[in-house]
Length: 221
Image 1 (cartoon, rainbow, N blue to C red):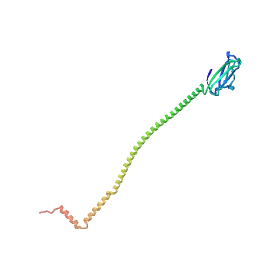
Image 2: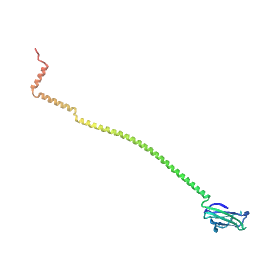
Image 3: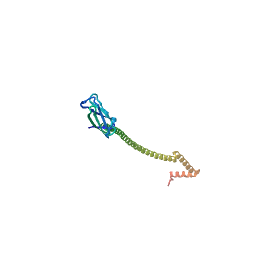
């Protein structure tokens, strides 16, 4: 009779129940490996569990396949029982442990994914902040360009003003002051008077006579 599937390399406990739960019996267990060869090292007498009439012994398979166990009541000379054990690389428990391990790894992966998502969320926030800063920098650049345009205009106005000032300075330097004109006029008048006088009294007298003649014309009649 098949007793289930067991994992290779793990000890298997085999039990035997005597007829009528008879105690104090000598029960031997013969172990046959997956090639049906007797494993004498693991064969031998089974121990009774207290005084229950139930006996047990374990063996450990070292290869996968079907192992056969034959139990004999040597005291009474009968009551042989045969059990078959399918030995594989995994049993239900090991599969469960593997599944649990996978689930644990899945949980770990989920944790890692959450951590990555948190980082990407931070990166997205940083990118948004950088975009905002870039926008503000662009706005500042626009203001700076506007200020530069104004200062360029002011520089141009100042250059024109400096040029006008330079021209007015030249004009001021080339025009004689009013006092100089007065002095020159006096000199011209003096020269004219001197020329008129010229030391020639006849000329002056003639001019005086002509003025008098105009003032008082000769009587006619």
